[in-house]
Length: 214
Image 1 (cartoon, rainbow, N blue to C red):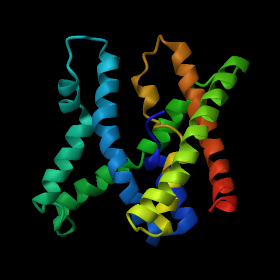
Image 2: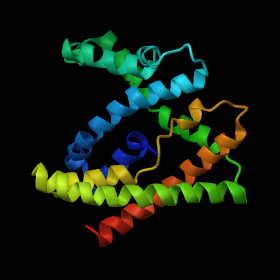
Image 3: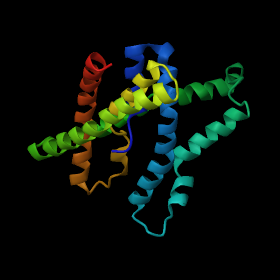
């Protein structure tokens, strides 16, 4: 309910609809979101996964691999490590290798989501109910926030309003199944069905919203 799959869905959708030159609009909106996801959200999920009352949220946050990666990238980037990386053959080779490995993340996570899905009447009903509640809350908030906060209060153009709406119509983060214990199949199926159906419905909802409301 509290996150959106911007990385694996949002950027692709926004690029296709509005073009690469407008991608900075979505990236700016995503900055606060991704900060929340890879700090508060991931930290809480790791704590829940460990099922230990002795593990503090702060410790889960600090030891989270995504957090280490994000802060490591910020530190190295601020030191100028990445500026001349292409001129160094060894560093360039390592960088390209990591890029190739990184490109596997999307299909691997999609395989994780799809591999264990078992559709049934109850699973689909619960997923559709969640999607209806989620979009029923997020779309009106996105329209109101886009008009009154983004445009009228902060003075941004309509592109940023579209970015806010795109963000809030997206499905939940695809990393959710990674935090569910294998033996907890009921929650696993609920989340998997919700993610898969939500992705399709989100694309349809975006077409409807941008066709009739914007």
